[in-house]
Length: 292
Image (spheres, rainbow, N blue to C red):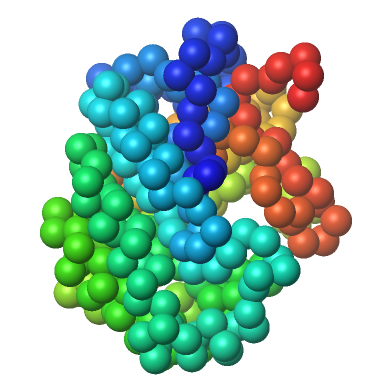
């Protein structure tokens, strides 16, 4: 199944937590990847985020997410990872690229997008995220800029043939050199960035705590010239009470220095893959359960 379909009967929806982002009538849009259903109340989120591979997945289950999002008036953001989640099924990064550019993977993208076309919620398609982050597990992050751009453009073209109304997100991590991977204004509707605040990591790398604004600024400055709406497509923070309070207060605030920032989407779970450098898997979740 896709990752992130919430439990509609979650008992943690109403659990108070100092880690929940502070939302006000003047906040930018807030959304979440929320497999636990911690943001189940209608007013708590405007964007429902899912992750899915484009093979070995039951696409019919997207209807469950659509029903959940539609009942709450939310947009459905679908991150499509162009591989299998089973390592035994994966091919090398160059073989994956070859198969995409040759058209052998068109059916994978067409299957996802034709299914998404049957859904009722507004759709954002985010394909091949964080391609500029070479120190991770994603096959597509090992491609050159021209290779990624060609693959992205082909997949948007395939998707648009089946899904007419979606917005397409290009979503780098925010690193220096990301411009090499920008696929073009005609295939990008929204730019996404990833922003995580991990107090232990901050102090080890810089000797102090970093704020949300400090973490966002480098990536924002690198993408603002594209003239597209900017979203933080993956957001998380973890640390002591003071650190968490600072981030929770500021992530959805309108900042004068980020005029194109339209939304932040929280990653409400423990990190899927360990961070490099022995930092393990930070737990971004806003609600702590006794079983965690």
